[in-house]
Length: 328
Image (tube, rainbow, N blue to C red; front, side):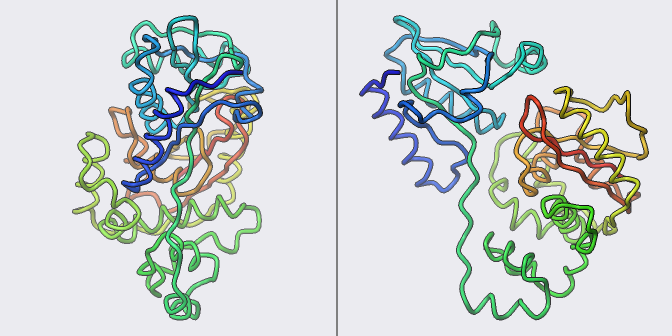
């Protein structure tokens, strides 16, 4: 595998710039031996998005970062003779790549499925979580008596101790459900926070959307400013079993969508999320509902008629993880 000095300069510039503005959700890395993501080594197919001359490495690096930030998928810059190409995704089977291909055709005309070429990768962009703000000792001592230590720590790490006030303890409605993982319990918690105080949730956990020019981000910010408080979502074991069955079956086959063949549909509304299983990323992604013109996921999460919820997060064949949320 080869490294090229011009790209090392471009990649370093992008990484330092993104860190400086405090909005890094993807980083560009030079591809050296043993440095590729594990999913890249296991994959057999990717989607070729574009290609350009070798003198446009800086521009291609920006495109790689933009793609990863928007679609939360690994992106690779590949040298092919005198041109460089942008490849995205890591797919074990060609059929999985075809599903994503149909989503991307409008944005990237002329895209096609290609076999992996790890030995020709000169740089790659991967999704990473934003670093949390470190808590201060006075804030910790102030909130421990009124809220569980796990939730208090999560809010402090995010830099929002306001959520540790007693009136928001009820958001942790799934705390005592032993059939749920901690990740699944936190999905309940963050969804309940936005339902209890929409404007405050926007100001804190979604503060970076305030000046966004994107339609989906801007519309979510504006909607939460005027949305009235909604009922807390309480756990329901049957809804969990419904969500768990669909998440497990979808994960085993690599399926994306709501159609079921082996699972009973015990819900009034359903949301499916693919990719990172971090609870805040799941809730954030469903609320923004990027590229979903109906805003169906957002409307389901903020539906005042729903009072019960089942959440299951399971492995997924093509997207690593998938979360299913069933509402009633």
